[in-house]
Image 1 (cartoon, rainbow, N blue to C red):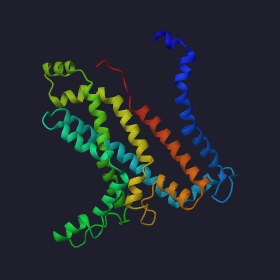
Image 2 (cartoon, rainbow, N blue to C red; image 1 turned 90 degrees about the horizontal axis):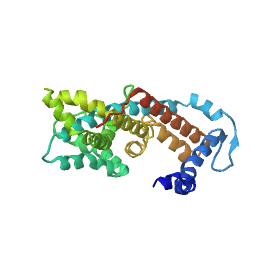
Image 3 (tube, one colour; image 1 turned 90 degrees about the vertical axis):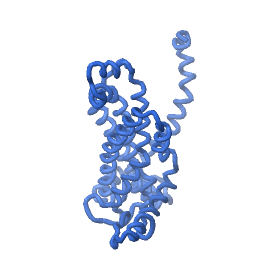
Image 4 (tube, rainbow, N blue to C red; image 1 turned 180 degrees about the horizontal axis):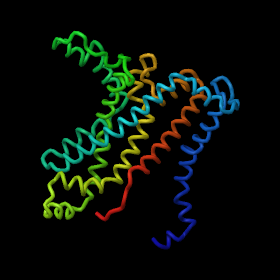
Length: 295
């Protein structure tokens, strides 16, 4: 093995397939998108370089401002809620023996289901004349909420509804990451804390949480990136409506690129989305201080 690791040609041969895949699938499309963001590019004509015009157009795009606000809302809600709920599930399931695998599979199951199908399912559940409202009507509630149509407030009701649906769907991913990290903590540390008189909450606070910090940073980064490019649930539940009030950056990009065929402007939105993802990831890694411990 040491001889193989010293062989630079062998290393290059093993790295070449991954490097080609990365270049063709990721790097070249990113470079092309950055170039197209400086162009007027429509389906009927070739790209024409126009400089920063697409980015200037963003400053007066009211829908983009709504989409940015909603994306930032999803970012904050997703990071905070999945951190807290995921940790709670992981802590509870780690300390129970009977039915652990069943509960774990039930919570994780929505993560592997089709987001398109779940979006349609929840759309019917929150429909004005079906699902929850039908139950409320039977219970005597005359004016049930318009779950996916109410446009009042700074963060409108449909955004809260979709945010909680996304929490339900993806919290299992955070839970599994935290459970994997907790299972790697040495039992001798836990036993030593109990011998020293620590209760289970104290052990979780002073031993488990510090050892979970690397995984917290990883999970928060994944949640942040996923929330910024959030698309499928919103598109299937509201399609960005009513009146573009539930648009996010990904749905606005889709509308501009595939409905209005403004590929240049859509590429500019994609570049902004990419920069936001990188900035948020760097911020999380900077804020969530991690230290290496022997477990």
